[in-house]
Length: 348
Image (cartoon, rainbow, N blue to C red; front, top):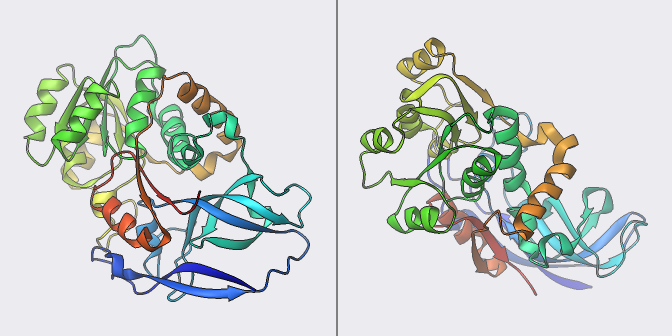
């Protein structure tokens, strides 16, 4: 028998309410370690919390590719761990592995088909990067820019990134620069974050939407207008950015975190005035889902790891420790308490 801690969904916040830490509950249980062929026993090292998980807290996620979490059942998401025992031919003890469907437990028996072996050398041993800069947020930023941004080096493009100090936005701005954008402007929610974007990540300017006039500051920071918008937040901020976009511009519709606590479809409907701007200026705005580009994930991971190891892509992380803090970490992330990728460390 093995004693295990796990986090289950304790309650649903309601489709139009903010989640709270108490929506999650820590439990202890035990199970017999009797691996069947194809199964792997893993010890969890790191777990991820991400904005998309808010949709999974509802009975209906509003999407066709996300299943809802069930009440009193173990929550899952991105995770990294080490193999302790294996009856799968591809995995041996001490292998580092990851999955998009990792249960929020300190140990678990998983189907080997859901696991991918990781090479720690790709991230110089910073394993948590596989949940951030060299994981799904990094791939989302890279492929979002390449597939929907239409960035062309030498054309003097200006890009604006909302949610710019988050896991994806902090990478997207840097990647736009690496891909050839001339000016990179970030929008975030504190002066501290603005300073990090400019001083550490190389953004040209940063706007604190909580304290500054976003319309006026965008006009100041983007005198030639906006060509590309990496949209992580939606809502009034995005309407303001789109109103200042140039003809034939491109919106990378990555996330709409400002709308996730509202009972609206995804992507949320736009005001008529914003829709008119898109139409009359021939601005593309297509939903981007990184899972639709699986064939490009391997190449993208190599590119991201090269940039990280070479110091061209700076990595920001906010790390909490302990399985008991999963709910708190998720709540903090949804409220903008993280700088870069929010990670929870479960074990050494």
